[in-house]
Amino acid sequence: MTRLRLCLATALRYAVLEQVRNRLALALAVFFVPVWVGLAYTAMPTAPVRFFLRAADQDVTVAGNVLTQSPAPSTRWP
Image (tube, rainbow, N blue to C red):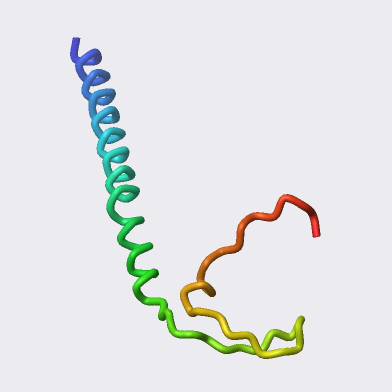
């Protein structure tokens, strides 16, 4: 009977630990990611940024917050 209780206790312990880990992942997804994105958005200036674009061989001026945005995925191969 003690072997059965030991196995049950082990299984219960693992089940509880798994639920705790899932809640941590949920808390990270719900709170941490939006806060991090918000901080990145507020840290980037909206003032225009001028830089030299070698491909066009000219100066380009773009809003600072546009530079941090990732481009849309391309469907065709370059």
